[in-house]
Image 1: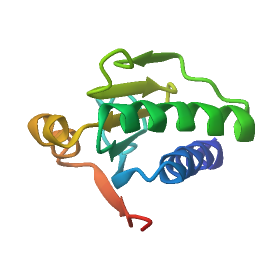
Image 2: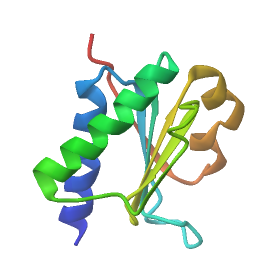
Image 3: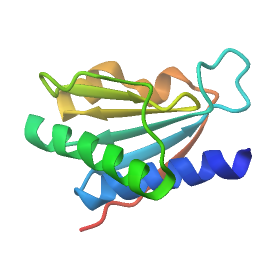
Amino acid sequence: MKKKKNELVQTIVDGLQDKKGRDIVVADLTEIADAVCSHFVICTGGSPQQVAALAHSVGDTCRKQLSAKPIAVSGLRGSLWVAMDYADVIVHIFLPDMRSFYDIEHLWADAQLTSIPNLD
């Protein structure tokens, strides 16, 4: 089961990197008792169009590579913050101002955070 979760997280990261997602952070919540999922994958897009493109890329990549579809996707209409729920993994794609305002990765101070280097 853990391998499948890690495979999903890596596939999500691949989809984000394919569309030049920036400042990707994976928050491992597996050691936190009250966590709503096992991982958050957090990313920044430079514009609402890029945020939407990142979300579509994640959806396409997960569907093609793992036959995985999100349970729900919220925020595509304005594309300021898109959340994609894959049950054990939740993807958050933000515009820079929204990301710094909500500061999701630091709300879970006990989580293990892994920063993924930007692809330039």
